[in-house]
Each structure stands twice: as C-alpha cells, then as structure tokens.
Length: 387
Ligand code: GLA
Image (tube, rainbow, N blue to C red):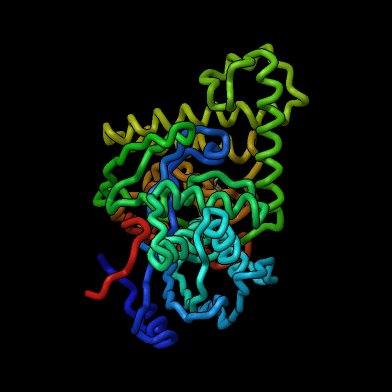
C-alpha cells in the first residue's frame, strides 16, 4: 500500500506522533450506472488512488479542534452543542459526529488534522472520501466496531439528515469497499455486489475535468431525486407492488402509464435504460468487448444529457469531441453532473495524444485549461500504519 508521505508528515507535524490515529479514504470513479443509486438500481464504481487523510488524537476535552491543512482553516466543535459551523468541510465532520452520538457512542474530544488529494467538485466524490476517512478514524478512536456497511450508512445518514443532500450510497460504497484493479457492480436494492477485474494495460480509464461547477450542482441533484419519487408514484398506479423505479425492467412497461408530464417520463425511462446498460456493460467487460463498453458509455451520456438533463455544455463538448476518434472507445459525464469530469475509455498508448486534443479544443472553445487524471484503481478506506 502506498501512502502519501508528504501529507502524513504534515499531519504528524501538526499533531505529534504520540497516540495519533491515522486514517484515509479514497475518491471514486463510476464506470457506468449514474443517478441509479437513489433509485435502488445498479452502479459500477471503483476506488481511486487519491485519498482524504485524517490524523486524530484524543485531547481530554469535550471539544474537537479540527484543522483543514489544505485550506489553512480551523474549527472548534463543542461536542455538547453541535450545529452548523459556516464551513462546509467542518459541517461534514459535525454531521458524522452527530451520527455517532445517535448510535449511542459517548463522544470524547480530540484534535484533528485533515488533508486531501481528491480534487473538490470534480465528481470524484471528495465529500464521501472526507466522510469515510473521518468515520474510519473515529471508529478506531471510539472502539465503535462499525463494519463496512455501517460506515456507508452512517455517512449517508449524515448527508441526508444534517447536510440536506439526498444522495444515494454510490460514493461511500466505492470509497469503503474498493480493491486494487477492481471495479464493483452493486445492486443498491440489496447491496449485493461483485468485483470485476480492470486491466488498464491496453485501454485505460482517463478522466478529463471540465474545471467548471455550475450552481445547480446541489439543487439540481435534489430536484432529480424528487422527480424520480414523483415518477414512482405514477408508476405505482399501474404497478402497486413496486418499491422503486428499478423494479421496472422494460421501458415498454411505461407505455400506458400516466405521468405528470414528459419530463418525468424521461427521468423514469432514463433510469430503467441505465440499469439495463449496467448489466450489458458488465457482460461486455467480461468478454473484453471494448467497442461494446464504449458504445454503452456514449449511450449513457446521451441519456444523462437529454433525458435526465444533468449535463452541461462543457461536458457535452468533451464527449462529442471524441465520438468519431478511434483512440477513444467511449466517453460520458461522470457523477452528479452539472460540471466535473468526463470518464473516457482510451487506448493506453494514445493517452497523451487524446489529452493534447482535448486541451487544445477545450481551451479554444471555453478559454479553460482542462485537467487530466489517469488513475489507478486502488484500496478502499482504512487505517494508515507506519511502514
Ligand atoms: C453523486 C451522489 C451519488 C450518485 C451520483 C450520481 O455523486 O453523491 O450518490 O447519485 O451523484 O450517480
């Protein structure tokens, strides 16, 4: 296991070595299966070699004194009176602490330093990495014995209840269960999952960051969750026994369903089609059929852009740029949308050429320098041990 020695040194420098708990959790990519998680559908993520690190050290008080080393910001949290702090990163900590409290853990004070390699707002889920890294550290500090799924659920409850983000469990699942060189296809309805080997020698997964974040990042997300719930209500008139959109497997079943409007119908049919794409993708991946995998990525993007409407001009531009380019087998926006990265299945030998092309075209069109990440698929969250 490789740890970021520079970050560890900075944390040790801040807190000292004695009694220090070190933990970390990774960001994630998602190969396919977008916006399906909160609809109890299928996802296909992997953990990446970019981590959020935490140092935690008991201080004998009833306060948490936290320092975000990258931002050079500090926050003191009174464990007997926890509320919003005015700083987003610190609110994530408070949300998690409140969840430990709700689970009957007697909270004790500590000093804490945090630092991250996961780019914020890129769709690689720095927030789940923050949450899960922190929870793993607290799990040790408080001897709470949470298992992996409890870590996922604790973070998700904090997001939903304290931060008001109605997100599903895709990000936390990937961050906690990740394994080197493997992606994971998971059914969010029953949490069953399988590891799928990912070999990047011939074809690689390349992220291209649009470096834009549109303001409806959070509001648009929660709107989609609400629209899906409204779609589900309409579906239930015809199919009273279903509990989620993902219980419907065939878009033809929507034909005589009365939806509020075309928009809701589109949201629902996107989810059903995306679930089908995940299944087809898994099969194509097993058969090393890169052409089929790539086509499914383009189809996924088309659905996300036109039916689910969570893309933006910058993402659409980068995807379209490669549609007829044999170096890129497939491309789509990744994560919540409204900015962030595209994920691309690229001939490994041609990565630098693809990067050059994207850089030139994107810069000319939007005046922005895109960023590139050729990532390793890595371990999930855990404690950091001295080597
Ligand atoms: C964000 C959310 C996830 C998931 C994705 C879209 O990353 O946090 O729960 O819904 O968007 O697939």
